[in-house]
Length: 100
Image (tube, rainbow, N blue to C red; front, side):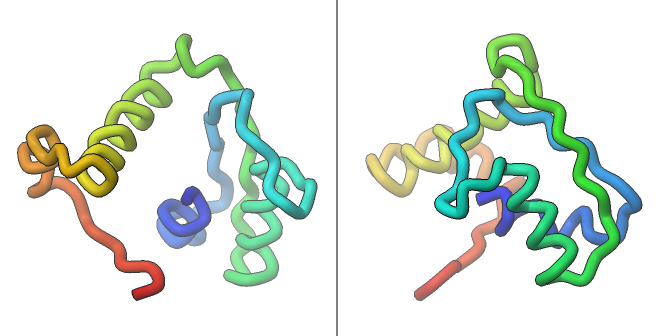
């Protein structure tokens, strides 16, 4: 999801620090999350942006907690049909159709 949501937004910057939960699962290629995103940035997007990895414990970082909270709201809307919180935030969210 990070590939689809942030790379286009950071590709014009010299560097970007990615603060993520240190339990992030490696992608199928076996590379770490940042290695994977960095290779996409350099080779697919032809961007010189350097991604700096800053893993931390999610329960100690308010930004990660907020991201988890927002992700849960979106997930609940699409998976459970619980749209109460999603409706309240809808004016601040942008939908991105991926494959259909």
